[in-house]
Length: 134
Image (cartoon, rainbow, N blue to C red; front, side, top):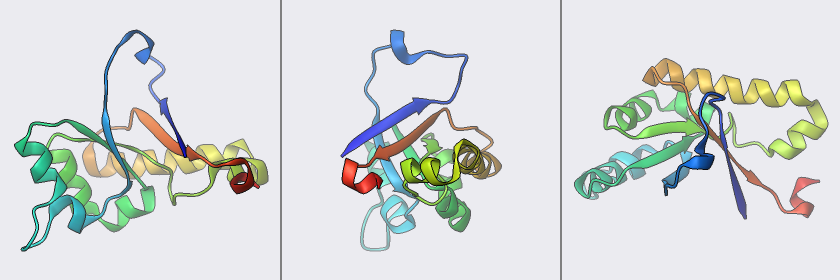
């Protein structure tokens, strides 16, 4: 599987910077991120080792888990855009066009902004294999 990360900020360029970013996608998943009585959550583990990370979150899950989203952000982790409903965006573009694709991305950006006060800088999508794209 290939992941594509796109810088959403036209005023910056990552081309001249060298960096590695630890990323997680598909959430937020409260039990994984915050833990349970029996198990420490990922946020606490990352904080304990001072490991920065970006969380590429799905818009409808952000809206369904606002407290988890806020907690991740308040703990210093960046929340980025991973589409609104984890759709196949190649298929969405082919079937509904550019406007539908942009609406999907912007809807997620706004959901994240409402909860964190920060607009996502990056967008991540998985590029499906050829047979998956059809």
